[in-house]
Image (tube, rainbow, N blue to C red; front, side, top):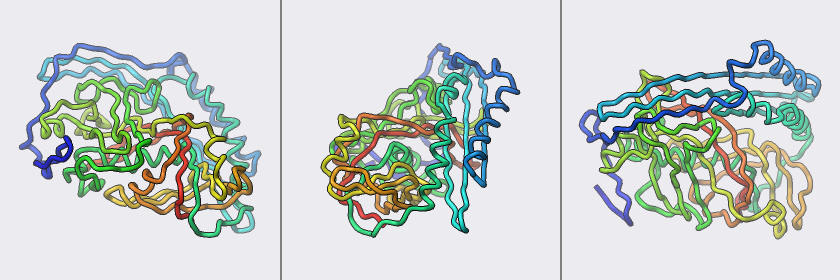
Length: 387
């Protein structure tokens, strides 16, 4: 085992031979069903909900339209040999859409995922009618926009991008089984090496299963461990790994509630829940105020990251130029191609807003997907290469 500044990494993980965290004797119950419970909403109402959203896409000339609505209801009793008895009853709702527009042989698309742990009161309050209309019209603007001249710019990214960055380049590399190589043949490894600096002092990335109503919400994980808020990166430094009972045992620690499985018959792995970049003190106008020549990338249409979660790429969907503190013309598909340390180190200002999107995170062999939320505020990054 190697140590540096207080955090240990053991470069081995032998299935069946590791010590487990065996803490327990928890007697608890929890619920999260929302106000408008899924069983109280008639099937015809759900169909009408989807048809109305599809009509908005159709009326705005979307040539490709996908609307998907999923519900999950769980009533579970967990028992273990450490004396725990935990009952839970909750529901999750997931809505996904994709809209595409073709114009003179050119094509652009947009997709969004929303989810909650609770009921339809949350989904209905999202005002999806307005969001989808605005999004489809934004696709039309992308088709008419020109590309940016490659070079270095000051860049502002929106919450949708800061969310996927938090999930892919903080959440995944801080799952302890990746760090010690147990996931290498399935989902990849991690570039993390001890207590290293990831970014600037103002960077804080959190994974919090207890974030109420989030799509990744739970109070006890699938190994009966209490869930709690975890600072993965704190003040720009590696701070706390995501642990299940197996990985916690290797470190002679207690699990921090990161053991998740997609079903009762699947192995609980060290997994994310609700992962986000912590908001700061700036408002949006303050972020752009002193940018002489820059780019605002509000959302993404594509992303890629390597198996160790280091080299990464984000392709903008809705994006604009910034000139002397003012948002100007629309541009098409600006590309950020960078690495995790450079991205977080380039952040010099963090806004005070916070938005989330939902997703299903895949991992393991056999592969299992679990519901997650990802989000963050607007971020300002200095001197980034954009092409």
